[in-house]
Length: 153
Image (cartoon, rainbow, N blue to C red; front, top):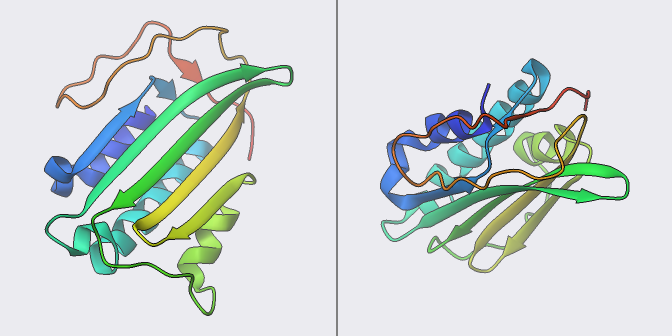
């Protein structure tokens, strides 16, 4: 499954208030399931308590592939703005635990302007250079140079 399709599907109801930008990445079934869980939790919380709970609220979702000495890394970011003031929760509920455990390398920040959630996923067999495609349009073409995530979490 293409990560862009997964993100667009989850945010379809808020398409005018969500900016989606990233390279074409084909996820393994396990990775797709993990991203689906995280995206659904983020979108649900945003609708109830975050940026999507206010008319001016917006979300930017982006991802890139970076190559370093240890290989290629998918860097995914969800960033909210324009919602109600945010503060760190007193306790961690199921949703927060899910977001912190669904991937091994995550960061969740409770910033005054909205939450920021980042995921880093190490990729197997990723090409050294990838075409960057903007996914703001309603239709997205699949690149001939898709990246397959094949390693387990």
